Image (cartoon, rainbow, N blue to C red; front, side, top):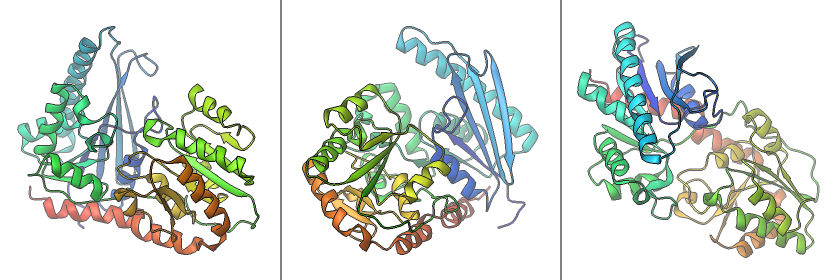
Length: 393
């Protein structure tokens, strides 16, 4: 690919920043992967309600090779009423975005393409760019609201919100869901769209296999936001059953804790076996993964599952629900176990069965497959090839 090819402008609705360091970190990993092949300029606006970073507007820019990241923090106080709060915030969001981009294009030239990550709200700006400069946009989606089984679903949003999302998706040159399962859900709602699946990535410099000393203790790990989607109730219920069955185990939990999660741990009387760590950077997370026998991700619904490929890249099998999405990621008894969904009893049974065969899984084969499918090189090139194909300016 020619170095002189114009940059691609990324407009993510979620992206790591000072106020939310892990928000959309999977999008940032995509950006790093793509920047190995083509210049990527990321522009992300963050509302600073409390004035932590600024009481006005603050622009922070960082450059790393072909990747330029620009984070704009803007202060907008919270209104008591939800509707005027959303209206004034969105109005300021749009005004700042349009002003900054107009100046940015004057200095840096127009991008080859615009790439939106998560339709709302960044997609509103992509549609404005398309109208004003005629530059088409692609859309990567990862949001669960398009799934029928999700909670909340798109139908739970306001009519205006639904209308704006629908226009953003319909007007995209190409939609890039992270899984076939999500792509089918999107096309069911918008039959006219074209889509190609581009999965999430795993950093194999951080997540790689290690063969620890074998022992009888079952070492489990769970990584998630611990919300309704992740079904913490079934997770801890199953863990409680393990203890009652006399299984020697430990469970390291990484994610956002709460009083409710603590209550589930206490209810199952597993305070000694479960350790709650909170959110940590990936290098720290990878160390715990390498020491684990299995990842548990028994979600009610997912559009992908980044922690699954991170576990697999570390040589660690994943124990997941037997759903269409999980079949895209997990081959039963090769890189994990598929468990009948929605049953703590079935999950506990699978964990007990796994404890007997945990040393039969080939860590290196699991890691090699994950690296082959989800490495920065492979996924970055997938995006770069798509850009080349659709670049016609």
